[in-house]
Length: 308
Image (cartoon, rainbow, N blue to C red; front, side, top):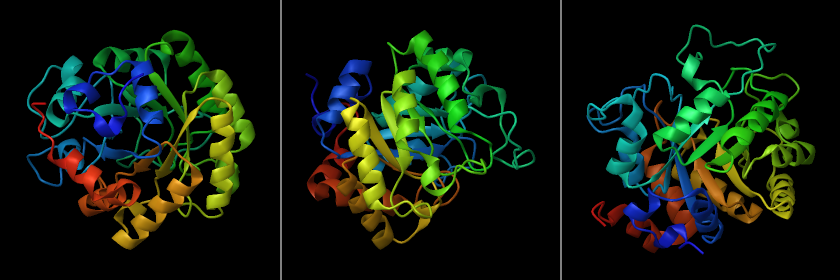
């Protein structure tokens, strides 16, 4: 059995097999923090990547949003061959790295055609892109959607099944939505149901993603706790996500959401990338970490040298 994430060094965290990663997350008993960052926006610290900044505030995993595997761009990253971008992020942060891929339902109208959120070829949840991601050193692929991009649960399930059959034995696959993603009829409690969880599990998901309580209208702690329990009964891990810009709220709100998520029994806690666009407010990453595991583990993660 692998060490739990809490006790891993940067070298250990950035070189895990799929089985080791799943075991290490489960063994941490709800004390793993994933921070979502965007690489194509101007970094908050200009010449330091948002991934490095988020890692320095206590995140265990960096989740790259809007990451195009065919044309990877992360501003402030040292000049690197595109096939080595993820490995360079792992070298600089000493963290596990996941990416989002989006199973866009082509029949759903997108409101983002002329915005920063507009899709690019390497962000679609295709088998080709997933294989590229796995070869680049990505630890986890999250099949989900950005606001307004038209990602349905049916499309997630279809992409998940195809990707799992190709590389499901080599990489952790997560599936679900943290908001409606532009699909009318999949808001509130319809964002994810027990039936969706069952279908995702059957299609090859190792981790089920769902909204954090209090982040989406109608999503209560009791509702998510029931879904987390159901996912666990199917042998799957869960990740509760803040994807509604509340990563930019005050720290008291963040700590409340963190504890509500802890009460659901979730395995991974996710904090989004739009405090300012690019990552959560740095103080909120630290506040979330402190709420779910205390200052000792938080400072330990922040202070540990990348040379270890």
